[in-house]
Image 1 (spheres, helix red, strand yellow):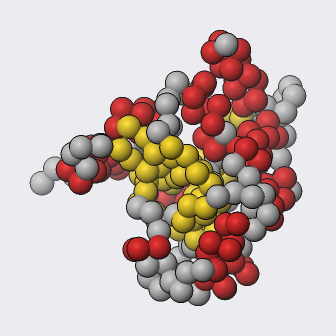
Image 2 (image 1 turned 180 degrees about the vertical axis):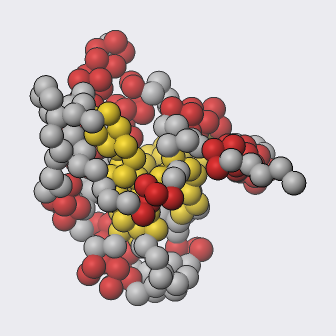
Length: 236
């Protein structure tokens, strides 16, 4: 019996997911994508990746943790973000406890065409750096204060009717998921902060992003902001 390598298996999973979503929505053929890293900044999507999101909204993903476990280039861009589900969570969760412990990730929920969703997957390195992860974020209208938390508190549990079915990305390798985080560049963090401000994510989450320790880079603070700036200049 032939045994497939993990990257090949993940690629087949990606193709299967695309076919599955297409069957579910033959007319619209759109995909919900939850972004939590640099893709939160709309300019990353439109200018750097040349995508055209159909819709976007602030959103919160309970029972997950923001991680920086995707290795990058040391001293340049040391790592990229991912999300990982928190072990031990049941289908019915204690929303209050999740909020109290901070076991949630805020981000941006994009609606994408099939072509743009495929582009996100390929440019993000699926299935080698990231793998697709099914999730159910809760969209909200950001106010920069507590709108996301209030949306969560209105739920008795994370029922199917209360959330939106979406795809997000998590670390593709088990040793990355189980290993220690790598401190990201300040430049990369600044892009995350930019996206959080743009969509008025909860103030407490913005503060959390601002307090993340940055890794050592040389020279400067990293390249993420400069790459985005150059993409914006080309698009003018």
